[in-house]
Image (cartoon, rainbow, N blue to C red):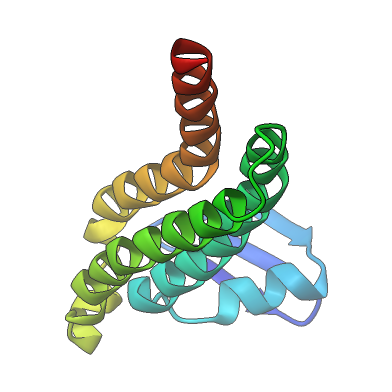
Length: 144
């Protein structure tokens, strides 16, 4: 068990005996430990940050590659389509987590499912812009 008191954390085992002793923590760690577990909020935050990363990578990776083709409108149309396509998928994942009741949202047994969805989300957010760019460059070379 973890108990936050002032600027330290007491760690105890299930019988109440001290296991880790007292360790100082910063303000950020205190807030994180004191905040109740809510998988819904954590997934929502992950989705928001993943969308920011995905969009930024789309702009800087895909747009750079698309602009080398010489078409003026194609890069912007591709950006709108690729960003617009990922939003419904992210919303579907978020909706699945939003359906949890308050008791389910605080259940630590959902940690594995959360980590699985989190890994998938971040793999797609970082990987898709590079995959789209590679596919586009491959098709461009094939038909050039």
